[in-house]
Length: 60
Image (cartoon, rainbow, N blue to C red; front, side, top):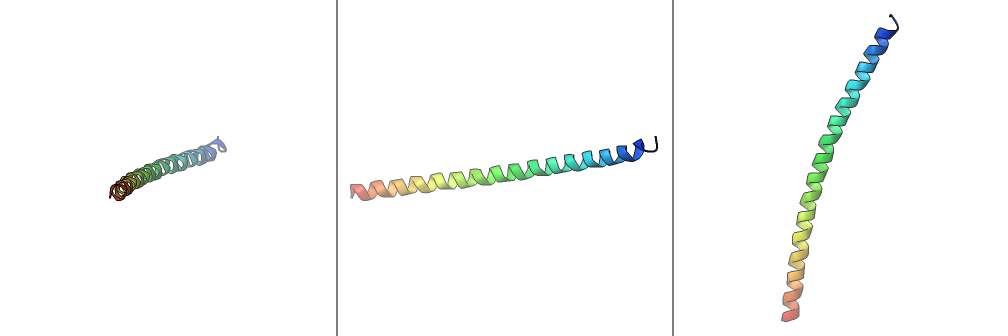
C-alpha cells in the first residue's frame, strides 16, 4: 500500500498535466484556425480586387 499511494499521486499529477496541455493545445489550434480564416478572406478580397483591375485595364 505504501508503494501504491505515491504512484497514484504521480499518475494523477501526470493525468492532470496531460489534460491541461490538451486543453491549452485546443485553444491554440482554435486561434490558429481563426487567424488562417482571416488571412484567407483577405487573400480572396485581394485576388478579386486584382482581377477587377485587370479586367478594367483590358477593357480600356
